[in-house]
Length: 139
Image (cartoon, rainbow, N blue to C red; front, side):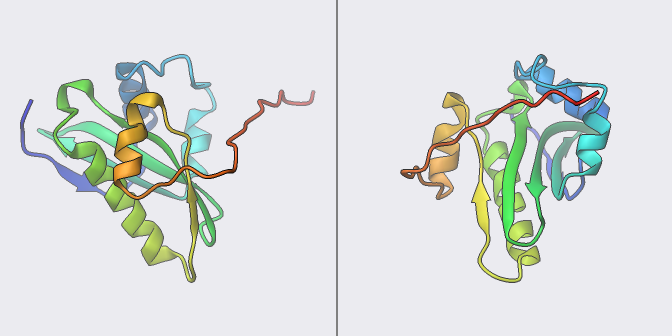
């Protein structure tokens, strides 16, 4: 679908985030009860808007100075393959460059479907291995 859209420098609302995450198949990837606090703790955000509706999002987490991680970049499937994902990513990277006082480290985890987007934007594979661990809260 081709339409007019524009980018806004802001975090998605919890409802926008959930709608987009579910639209791309990430419905089970989030703890929806804690998502508002997670969004509040994020460093940067960008949303794409068309016809008054949020059709894409991306956010960055990290210390806001040296280390940044691209998180939750998602585009409504009806608007994919039109350059919108790249536009959101490019805007996030520009905001990082404007904020960082010295060269910054930008990392991300990519799904297989997103690898070509990130490689085209200059992200490189390295000899480092991405790892994660889920920690349960301590009572």
